[in-house]
Image (cartoon, rainbow, N blue to C red; front, top):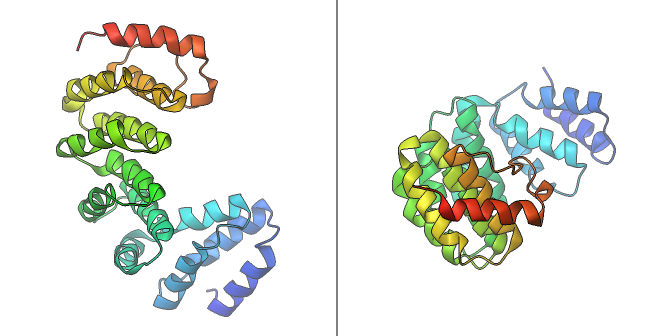
Length: 236
């Protein structure tokens, strides 16, 4: 079992330059204990956003492998956290518990609903991610409002994909979401948002419009124009 001091020393050693092997070993060591001290140290590492990207992703991913202990810890921390950027990181990790047999996803969904009205753009963005994963059809109106009015184009894009994700979990909401997306399409002038709307409509409807759903930037202006023409004629 790894002691905390050894873990801290290991982190200092690999934080500036880590190999794949180092990251794997460190990730395993992080999870050897669920004591308050280990949890606090792990949480403190979430603030180290300037480190190697792959190491940081390992640190974030490992938190959702702490099972219910980690989930409850983050639910407590996020409400006391004064930094909205850290709240955004914690909320994103909490959302991933959907895919880790999370026990308190209803609480996470409640937090996401509250943060949809946050003044900090990145917190609204993460709230959109999470509400798409764990939300309900009753959340559609709030997502639609951000799709129409969020001042940040990227957030309007995340609102579109949130509707798509919600439909994957609640197929009965498909027609409603498609109508909202199509209505929003005519008023969008940001390329990324238009692309996100069209990809979302393609995926919800099951149509084959030739758009790449995994890489938005792979879609050309010509492809989007053709997809938009089809989207506007889609029978809902």
